[in-house]
Image (cartoon, rainbow, N blue to C red; front, top):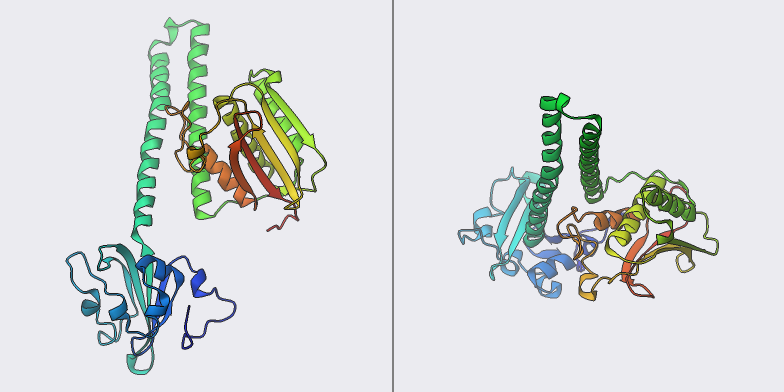
Length: 357
């Protein structure tokens, strides 16, 4: 949507319509030459109505006091030393808030040859800030209980060590150890969330046998006290060679199987099979519980989502992390009703060399 007189964009740069932020570019006469798809969506102004017109007429913006931002800014007649403007919260005529930044391209004598405006959705930032506040609140709540327990037991042991027999000391120390593990798991989850959101997940790929990885996770559950007949593995066909991060695959499988054990009932069935459509493999984890209501299916992979049976425990980050780890491999995950009732989480992974994608 750049128009015939749009500035030349090198072929190795993204098309303006591919940018996640709104982009407005005006020429030396303040005429709009670029008005991308995101700008049209945020402002509800069709690009066809914006191109070629004075941007100050097309996109009037106001500060919190109602002042006309363009008059205050005076982009073309203001200080010739200005190169950019920091992000500001501004408002459209209808009251919609936008986060706006601007930059100048100047020619000889400081004359403005091109004026660029970037628009972002303020509502998205507010949601992110609420999510961060929720995360802080959740973490504080989840840390309080185990740390209070650790502090209480250690203080008691230090003050009254000789009053307890060996069995009593062992019980208290085992409780402290379990609570320390709980804090460690929470910190690990927070680090995973941070890496997923910042795109800093490191992948250490090697050939992974998915069926063997499932057996390992199930064996760990059984060793921890689960009944062996609670689990069933179905390996169908021979998937192609899978280059995956083994630690992250264990984390994905452990989370999904634990979720099925905690929320489901009956047998937990794990199906490993080829995914011919994407030349890879698919893994399904099914339980026989009540399942997930259709209206909740779209929310299960969001941060802080908890099932109806688990609203008082856990951070609600497990499935969010699973989704992030699956997608970091180039895969995808869905949830649906299992064939025999209950919930079925199914993720697919592409085959490929270690440098995939």
